[in-house]
Length: 404
Image (cartoon, rainbow, N blue to C red; front, side, top):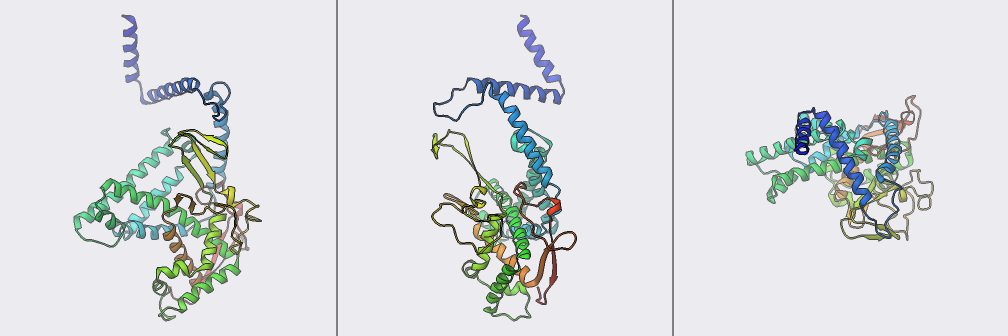
């Protein structure tokens, strides 16, 4: 039977071919299947308009335009001279709060973890955004970094269980609840991804904005100094020990100036986009059908940079009046049923580090020539909001007489 012999010969040829040939042929077959299924699928009467002709052919020019746009954004922001050294400090603080002493007390492990999380961030490229299933070099690096992070956290769990010593940290709490090891590892990895980068970026821009607006720097410093004046500590004590005596409720309820500064910073310098998938039946939002399985994308800039809600929206002004009668006019910490679970921790971290810096240092923001400058967040940089190289800024500082 020549037909069956031909299939067998083709299968043998495929199996004996090099991996590159097998991979290329696999991609071609996959795209062919997508082409056939997309043309046979019938749309509902009120479904979003379909692309003309074969959908796969209509996608190509769209893909090219989106790729060029994303690639331009990455090139425009990927080599910025704007350095956020506070990211390291926030990463260390977050590790101590959300992981365990086996990790946070080892400087080498902390440094290694920070580099691995940088790999995860830097692995976000135009190709991984548009084709997350394609095994590009960037995607492979992200997967390998994830594996190494898993190994680090898993090793810490094994050391804790082997030692039999109970400690007061997040890992011990999870172990005491009897969670499975895979759940514990995934929980800690997720917390670090969610908290380390975003909080560090906010802290960096917060310090930057205060360096550009001395009136708000003065008000924030006075607020911290008034809190310290009410503690049973001496001015000769270290600043860190004096701040440590302030109870949590003071940080959360008696810092209105810092609260306003944090809110304004997250409004101006937080280029987040909310994305949710409809896992239920089709539904309508503002008269538009969202089919089952479809994604809804909502950029925070729709409200945070809306001049109708915030006049002169790029201006840093913590004294703005709160927007009233407009639901979700501010979504810096999420909204509705989806709120940031680490809001309280992030705010306390931001206030502690800001208090240390404001009381322990005097600072301004300058350009590379030493002239005062006022950098504007660049929302094309979806991770750090770094300005382009020609608009970058640097922190010029000097120590105060307060012992740290």
